[in-house]
Length: 151
Image 1 (cartoon, rainbow, N blue to C red):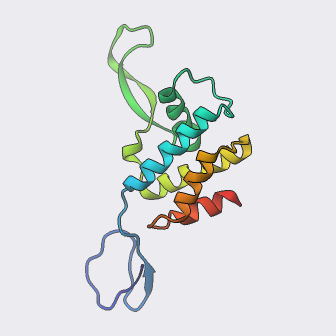
Image 2: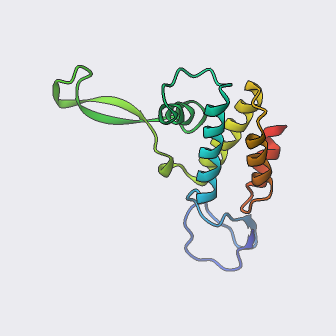
Image 3: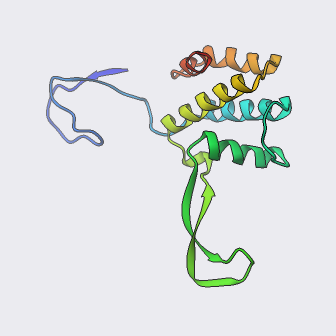
């Protein structure tokens, strides 16, 4: 969507100038369609067996994919040591970011990275290509995800 700023006012985000055109995104949050696409792709990658992850379950595999192909981890204060004993002062630790905290742009990047990784690993299942066809026909710019990742 393209917008034109026609009068001064208070704007959130970047400094907008009167008389300039800007591209606008409908929302900063990721969409439900992005969530469904990411987890469908991750499931197909897991089932295909083409990955080199040593994850023991699909859930662990999703965490692995989010950490290495998504937005990575986040720091937090842990009040329990690695051996299970209390740590009253807390210690810095890391965990994989939850998909719900990803922005729309971070979700798009994670999906593109996952598709590229799947191509590189040699995933050639019918379900994978069905998911890609679905991305090509979906709204909100998701169609560019599949074509960009495919080269």
